[in-house]
Image 1 (tube, rainbow, N blue to C red):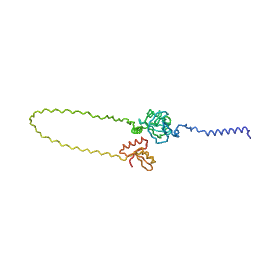
Image 2 (image 1 turned 90 degrees about the vertical axis):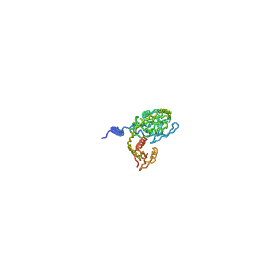
Image 3 (image 1 turned 180 degrees about the horizontal axis):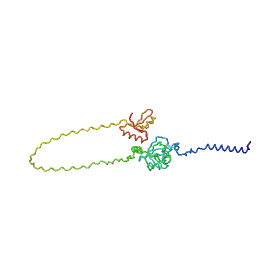
Image 4 (image 1 turned 30 degrees about the vertical axis):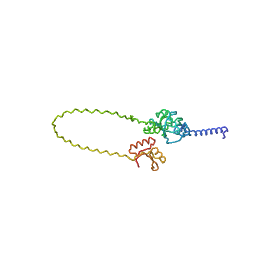
Length: 321
């Protein structure tokens, strides 16, 4: 039996609409895969932006992606959200540790903008960064060093919060950095230490007059007295005092070194050795950088602390081969 023309046309239209509806349903994204908003998560740190060279107060600055950036200078406090800073050449965004050369306190910051756009300061702190660092004003001595923190700390800064406080930089290293920045800056004194007393110019004491010699008594005529003669007693012989034997001198622990690190490139090892005042030597396929030798373990531990404070976290004490 043949269907009427109108009924066949209606069935064709219904079939086409059902097929179109099924195609749209298959192209929709699943409800379990939400789209991550832009600017949130690790992707917000990429791509890294450098930008073209520019000039501030007659000085031309060229942004560069320098991984081992480490510098000292003065900081000012400006604008900005969260614990962030403005810098003239570091990549945007990037991360750095800023140390106050007034207290040794060190914090982690996120570099988000260019600046300062005037003056001789090397970095502009946001109000939150200045508060966490404990500095104020436009002339605070600081050290800024680029680092690569873990994602948990990056996320805290991206969200506008603070990263956990760093260990304070040792006072000895702070004094070295202060002298590097400005020789006129007075060295800091460690907490609990007593500053050396001020010594006044020596003044020769006034001479004291010698007491007058006592007058001699007038001699009286001698009286004849028959003296009694007593035989002197023999003094007991003194016992010899045993001579104390000197304690044996402590032998120095010769041959103690601090290994700063091992590098696959001889040129990289030589550069680190030059900055650390050490030496580079081949060890298999690597080139290790060491400082020393030291005559005691105490000297080696002091050198190890200095190397770790300078960012060489793999440094360790070892004896000579």
